[in-house]
Length: 461
Image (cartoon, rainbow, N blue to C red):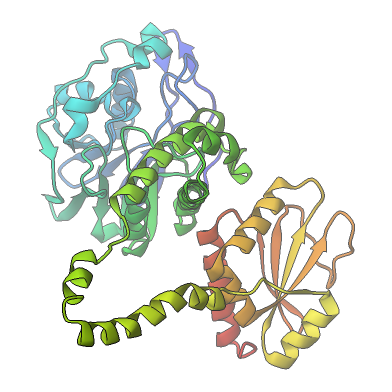
């Protein structure tokens, strides 16, 4: 099951807080309970993250124990009704309280607790102030049996489970990989129903690198701590947001903006509807600004002053040798300007179709509507990126229509804008329609897909 039904709100029963947990089988012997994509409060009992268990021949391995003792107890009851087996290991992928406070119950059952090194040092407890006392009853922090400080493999029966320290120099986050099932439990690496948060001192740049590692590894199913999507597209929201955040903040620093100006001006409106945007977006900009500003300071331009001074002693040789390298150095800015990709040219639809057919390119129709901030954001992304301009100018003929005013050709209908429609010019076949493009990385991937299809089917030069 790739996309799951909307989860219901939780209630309080006569026997204490009832989480109404419903198990979903994700792949063979892997079952998950899905949390709500909100902040913890009295009505949800802190159930805001996902918890999964892996059924083995001789016992269970639980990944993220949940927000409270009671939550873990109810999940355990469901496991035992399925098959009466002991819980052998608890693997905590994060130091987030909503994912670890069920540990106390499982420790009473004899489970071995594994988690990141930052578990004992960096946990912040606030959940008891956000949820009802009956939900928090018996809940406490218990120490780990083993800290995971490097990539680790455990073996239960015949199944191997890899625990990976996915972000270099970060002691707060882990992922779990089961090779036999081609399954990754990605923990807090992916947020697919709410805005990602740069909390617990997490590095923006290293997080993006970690996502690349995950993306390039071999898996069929991925389960995050937040959200119910499990296909490769589930990385899209987190990757797009973090990539755009990096690019926008870097641009702001480059333009000399202060942190306060960056916080005020970087809106990233295409993510405005994501849950917790109002809570986390400005904090993320502030944290990203500090990291990227420090990155700029730690990578100054290298000036080879000593060698140049020492070579001045031998005038006949050095002056001549120096004049040659100096010329290209003076001309470098000119070369950069020459290489700068020209702006994307837009034709009317008929002209784009005719020229694309003549020169064996793809027609790319960009559709927007009135009062569409996301459309404005896409325009900015396409104007700023040299890589995008280079890809478009080499492989596409662009045309542009406003859905609020223009009649769309070829029977095209789009409800959501902005939209990109890829059209084969020789047959007028609509190859692909993409709606809601958000970030540079996402747009580049889509353009590559169009090029790949064009070459495979012979209508692109």
